[in-house]
Length: 191
Length: 312
Image 1 (cartoon, rainbow over the protein chains, first blue to last red):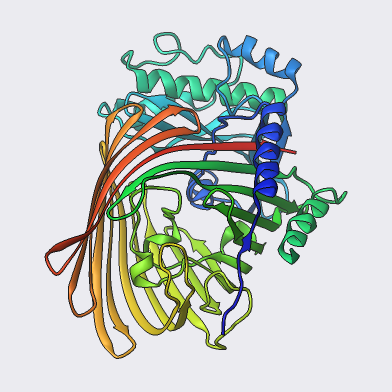
Image 2 (spheres, rainbow over the protein chains, first blue to last red):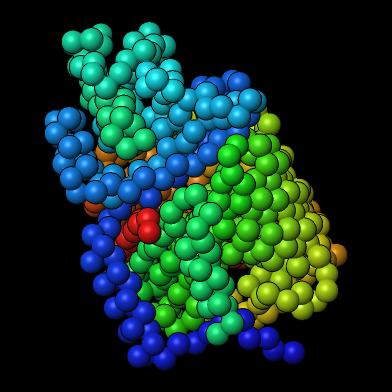
């Protein structure tokens, strides 16, 4: 008994599909967007908010005007994949109230992506910074001494190595500081 | 064309007023040049996919997640749903119910699907199929994760054509830099004919697998050991894969796999993966399949892979 489970498309159908794909993604300007996977989100959420009962996904679209404002505050352009939309997570406690928010960001280190997850209190201060994944040789930026310096920071703080953050001027440390600043600005502008 | 109705159904749901979040749309193109023993060289759009994900939330959190991915293969000559499921999410992901077609939670496949990579893991040897239709309960409890799945065991078919079920259970531990899992599989599996494996076959399998993933500095190490019975024969094998970061945008990839069904069959591969731009990769790989001490297949592949993401 032969079962048919796949469709065979003719050339014109295939052509239309290809053109549709290209036009859709070209006109919406989302080519080469970063498809970032946040591994074990529940585990990270409980690490940062031990009282968490649940979480809610919050998506925000970014207008051109808002993108320009974020880039002005950040002092550099957003990466591809960060310009159109932004997601963060509201952490809900047992009484149904928000305990805070979780945001994830990825920045390029010397040997690949550094994935940073950050907890923010409801009043917009850094609660904790967690390095989820990295492949760097230099590990100072993963130390508690370094990461604890971000706790309590807000978007109005400089968050710069050598100013309010003490560390060697290594690329990974600079990139973690950039990630924290970027996530705080995005939170203030888009939440 | 009935399957297209599922896509329309998900798109229609995305316009539902009570839906809290936007529709996340992602996709990708997998273009390959292949030079294989005894076959003409090919250059084709090996695959393309369109993925849609929609999250519905109530006051306290995410409650329903709808996901579908439609894949096109071999220059759009073939197409099918890779997965399509509805997931009811419990508090903080401690318990979830997933119904529909989904990626099976056996061994490394639970977290690492090599469908669009050049160096493949062992599913074609171990369980024959990667996705199946059924129901799965899974969740996370601190560092521990679990999954229990009952499916039709018929791969890309939608109906249970052999009226036998496939049961998979997996328990795992997750830490910052490593992850371990123990899986059990029991059931009759129907592996449909594909362009790569033209013979369709039934087999009754009972397998147990141990899998691990470890990050060590510039290395990402993955492994899987499988042992059990396929029909009346004992069988077993293993997979080891290593990715090494040569440069910020350049990885070296290696794999070795062994599968024993009476005789040892070896799979050896090496390759490079270059991250051209965010979401765009150029990959190269040379793979060998060795049986009875003879190279029965040598394949050189070049790939350009591009991913998209959008929110509507």
